[in-house]
Length: 603
Image (cartoon, rainbow, N blue to C red; front, side):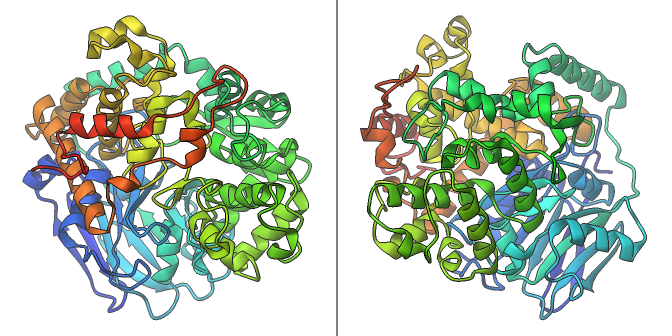
């Protein structure tokens, strides 16, 4: 008996309607662990590299980890993977909530979907019973409406649903997939991939029981993890504010993107902060499956009620675009979640347009007469509708910032802030050097979650010297040793994704290390996991990701940052005068990895 794991791989060909189940291979799982590692390896082995991401030949994978749905806290995540419609390279995105745990309880470690349904459909999974159902009546509905309609059709309010909205149906390249209405697989256009397959949703009901190999030992380790979380010095603040605490925290060190990264200080931050959100609008906390850090928020405004937002959405629709109206930011959070749009990519396209107009490169006439002055909320609302429907200039915005800038042939190098086609997050790398390196080398593009080297913000110099022999690793403004930190946290980030554990807890709070992870895996699965073979598995997946991206056309020239962050020093605040020496840092990263000078793995 395979403990911990669901025990099966589910394959669904949406073109033919053929469905089959395969048993999970224990030896294979030892080599990939699960979750993102399982998905990446499956793509590496089976995906044809030269396919169009929107073609039926693209694969759409849902992976969960060996400990998802168990007593391990914060282990409720799942990962979607495929060739990204937005970037044309490796794409994946993760979300929490309850959907991942339901997949495990239904008996599956991975769902592999190929082909394209001739008509709108959704995949229904109820333990051993799996069918492709007609979704014509759902096409055109938003995500909240879709979730409610499927539950009503099935007379089951507990069924877990991952769904797309109109943006995914219309193949907006940065469309999202939502679990529990508001837990978003936001990055790399996985909602667009759903839409390209005419797949409106995946609905799962699992009534199975998970087993672990060593119940007493596993329980004791889970209690240790609970304790690590509860005694963490940031527990209370993270519980109260979630990731929105970063609004004031990043502003305090001068790296809160304001007016499209032109400043790192926002003078009205108190009006749009997580603290103000909690004080004025939050009515209760929410959490994912089996998590003791209830970091999400349910809020009420004069117009609506919804869950969220996370920091990236809050920043993207306030300071990043010059808006000081918090209620508008909260309204956009709910709207994006219903329609299925990635807030980061949407916010970057808007910020790019606003700066291009400000600098005189383009005019409002270039944008169907929309007034792209900073903080113009009416323009933002109109534009979002146009993007979702791919109407007028919205059709160009729907392709993402890289394509948008190329369409106009202006502002491509100066103001289009993406890496490898994926728009950058809301953290100015000039004041957080390891994060800057992470954005540059991340396998899915301009992303912090591939490593999230939060340690550089801690000023724990003695611990840095003890762990890595380099005190400067704990200094966010130093670049020395950051390649070592990024290489370490890259494996740690992948580890959380393989277990499908929340990175905010496992990685940012630094409570999951390779030792306790291997003990959890061994006690949970009964397989011979050790720190050494866990580390070997993680390194193997990272190499597969890199080789796959090289096949997609990525070279060392793509491991870089936009010029603003390498050549324009910040002008004020605690990060004044800083830029990112990205070329030197990337070179050091290749050396730490043991890759050649072109970023090609030697093994």
